[in-house]
Length: 201
Image (cartoon, rainbow, N blue to C red; front, side, top):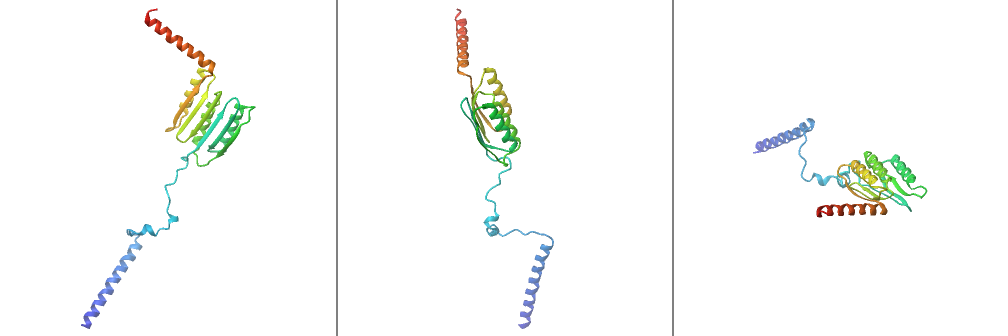
């Protein structure tokens, strides 16, 4: 009986040693064993990301520009200092001698290609005699007044050509009241002439 107990004990020692050697070999060979189901709970909360990081250049932004015969302002963010200075200079030249109320900052998270888009759109907006412009990462809205129908068409075409992919454009450009009245009268006369022609007069 004693001999049997000794034999069983020796077998247990051999098995244990074999398992320990297997684990050592796995580590030596770089074998990664599957983690336990509760491993995630052991990771400190501070070491786990709260959410997916926002890609550089995709940060939301907002830029507003307004001017008319009595006031001028610009407010929002741009990608770099060069763009900030260029916009301030362009708008001040446009509204001079009116003071320009400016609250514009540089946000490095914005993409550099956005700088060119902003300068192009604001540059076209300067051609209007009055404007309310708002740029965001999803939409560009512009309400303004053009000096002539040709200028209105030219500005609209340039703005549509400069639009970034995936950004909506809300464009409403009017003409001065006098020109709008003339255009309306011409349209009315043309419509009346068409009616008379159809009636055989």
